[in-house]
Length: 298
Image (cartoon, rainbow, N blue to C red; front, side, top):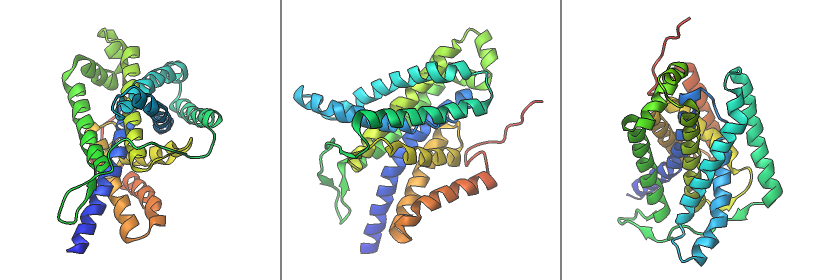
């Protein structure tokens, strides 16, 4: 019985971490789906969101507002930063080779890391409590509030995003731009606005993921987004990059695999197993679990 309880606890820990990976992977998959750019700077917006929310929490407390409102503040400011980054760094390179845009994304990542290191220092800073530390559940299975909120919020964001892309006018514009940017422009779709909105949504989701991550692991430093971003990228590739449900599926799988590896094999091998999954997926099914092979016209 005890072994089953421990197994369930590790499962929920994996779902919690996987939910965070899924939120970040949604940003990767949206940007890639629209402009075919692997935005390696996306992981650093987790770090940006963490610092913004950390500074916003004392303001929320002094204003008598719930602490979780810092998540909304971080999401809005990260969305604005995402739009500015796209307009300044990526828009001028839209017709350039993909390698040029990829190198620019790495440069933006390094810029954000060093900028925040100058502003806040390289040492890790403690993150204030966002959710209650009260444990919930019974029969030996106790779950924290942050675990439940993270899983529920992640699934809700994925469902809302999927509905937005499928049902709304702007979502249909995103799908049109991802299919054929030139044809979408001829049909009267504002391509620049559509791409900017995609970056805004992706960066806002990264900020939400940052608050969820810091609620579970309350330390913030300028390099926290690098490893998280890489694992979220693995999740996006596993599920099928460019596919919203695939990002969610990949995030959950990576989180659960990582949790079980730490629990039953070795915590030192957890990262190796995650990157090993990436290698296997690229060798066996490069389009991901939910991806489909698409022929390219010559």
